[in-house]
Image 1 (cartoon, rainbow, N blue to C red):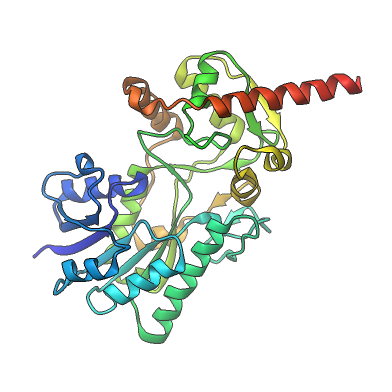
Image 2 (spheres, rainbow, N blue to C red; image 1 turned 45 degrees about the vertical axis):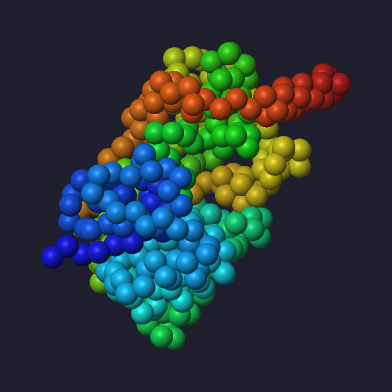
Length: 340
């Protein structure tokens, strides 16, 4: 008999790959609970319960009497949301998987080598502090009443619809790619030498699925990342190479970007991407023997860029961010000239 899984969400960057791999394997009976806004991303054979999980009463009515081997919330960001999930699922699932974030790890980092035992402290980013609070609530429920939680901490995960870069506007990374294609300089935070890890969502899905229904996962936290690390300069060079253009990097301090950014660069840079992080996935590999990420960044990003170039709907212009980049570069060049 197939085990039954419920995904809250199921059509986002991370969850789309998991949904697709589960549907292809056929070992789980998968149901998605979401608002149905991306129904085209749902594979054949996957059931959808259309509901807004934020309407707890309606969700409770539609889920009444159903039992699950695994429930995962991909869209829980603040404690009130996981408190709601606890009320909804505490008596009807054998496992509850919560998607937290590796950005919750200590910033500034005491060590670049990150394990699940690295302290959870981030004074710069409210998003990360909220994730920490969600983890704390769920783990307290596990300790006090046996709530079967598994915490998952992704880092920078990407798919075929987005190129993972650090300095971009509110509308995503396309404008950065466009600057590369137009031969314009591209802002890179710091001096480009800090190291970072990028994980293709298909690799993330393999690790995640290995933890579903896994008794060794209950009451534990796991990070799921690729083992490959690259400097940010290498990341941007790889993207430029996939576009067939020369990279023209323009390095700007993360602190400066945090002070003048069009949105909260301080949170995402000083609170996460400005630091070298080297993830140790030994705990995951013990729980999921044979797990190995198989998509190098240069492979994954070529596929992503080809998909974006083939689909104009994914090429979202951001003239405000483009103009801001030009102003930052011009101001810094003027400052240089004034000091010569």
